[in-house]
Length: 261
Image 1 (cartoon, one colour):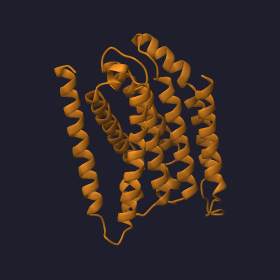
Image 2 (cartoon, rainbow, N blue to C red):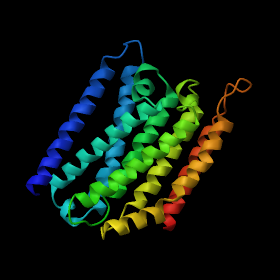
Image 3 (spheres, rainbow, N blue to C red):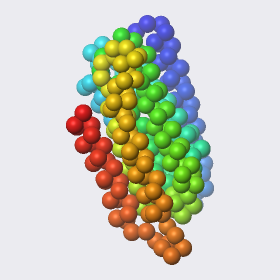
Image 4 (cartoon, helix red, strand yellow):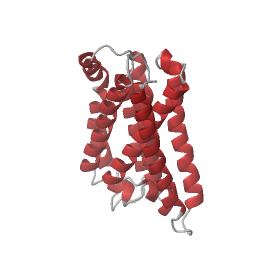
């Protein structure tokens, strides 16, 4: 590893450690009457699962130089932790608070949605780490592209649904499961769109557009689905099928696309 790569790894690790240590310290100091202990445990499991997906991609599909050097593995895991931190901050701005979902609420709908956000972010990271590249920039650049696209899609969905009102205010668990499935599906498609050997910036954009465009189709389907399936005055309780069914359909469609491409 070069001196610049070591510096990037150290900075990424310091930022990730500061963010997540601060987050779990805040969670620990939450209202003791809240379901904070179990919620924190679930949050940790989901985060470790997301990082586990990235680790699996690093040790099986990354550049051979990365697989053979533990320093690179640590560097890219730190970058993945930073990406999860960025997604968490963006999700909170869009109305999906990890603290409200896992600790303060408890809001099971928000917990489902944030879990989907973290897993989707993990899948994006995993895809960006698959393939050969000359420098760490050939991984971090595509990762930034895919992550920015994922957060942009979530922002558009938030704007179309009143900042996820069904999840945030109505606390509709099926709605949380539904958007969780959508986030995972987006992560699968975008991760595939940035996976592969590095050739050039132009080829990266071409592959990203060629493999990533189905995320827009999923968005076009998801927006009216949220309008139709959200709780109403006449139907305050939405059946679980309205959440699980679309979530599974989104994921199956994404898996089918990735397998076909």
